[in-house]
Image 1 (cartoon, rainbow, N blue to C red):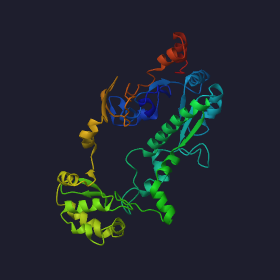
Image 2 (image 1 turned 90 degrees about the horizontal axis):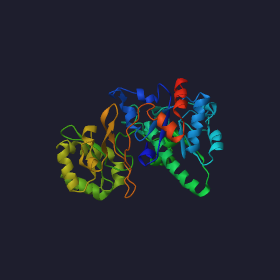
Image 3 (image 1 turned 180 degrees about the vertical axis):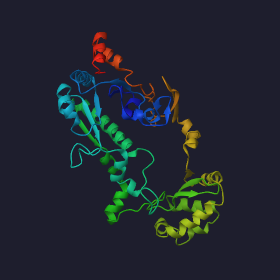
Image 4 (image 1 turned 90 degrees about the vertical axis):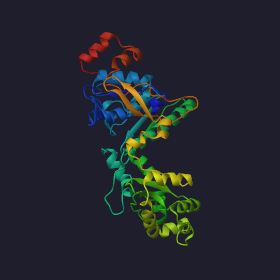
Length: 374
């Protein structure tokens, strides 16, 4: 989807009759369309193709011969059985960039295991550091391991295109959702490397910055406070009406605040319960304290900054009508990304792709339909 947002012509190959599994992930549905599918499939053309058939593979090979990039997410070993593996395709199109996204990668003892985002969030370390102290692990609320794998794939593909411009050769990119998740451990991993102590879950708090977490306010809403240095902490104390707190020897430096977290946080929690969220936000922003509301999605998608940055867009879909879509987060001065087409209906572009891109005639397409290849 990201490559499509950036202007690539993306052809999505789906199973005849059923298509992508996420077409059935619901409710909610908008008309007959899965909201999940609609969220990640814009700017793609959909064709149906049975890769278990000789005719289906022939179409696939013809598409691969004309393509810059091939993306697949089969479990390792499946592409060899289907005869669409990298080695097979590369002999026909040496310039092709072949990108595989799998749960655990093309090598190693887990390569043939099946995995979903939930499993990878757990094994990759995310769930082990997410949630309240001494409470059960919590899955991050979106498919972060999936999305992270897609982001790394995008970066790798763009790098491979640049490399090909110099060498003239394509290559095989091996993206693992577990690798992607592990890479996001960053400073939490380094804390472990430094101490050999497993980090504990801390809710919204931070292990080495205090205060850096959310607090409940008088109206039951929550606010985030990120006092990343001593000056910001003193600004916070001024807003709270207790400047002496900022010069207290127990709290006057970040290392001391981390050391005395259990003394400081209850004081702040009680203070924030004295006013409603928006009243606190006004005071905090006036005094340059990094802070913000913990939004519900209804608040998020009515926020004036989100709307100004066009992070909410409307797209016309052939069956679901006008649907909302998250905007494109990358902004360019010259090459403006855009949503050119809504998420496709199953197989809606099969005839167009076969005829205009591959030169198939009407009779040939009808024969493929009759054989249920498409």
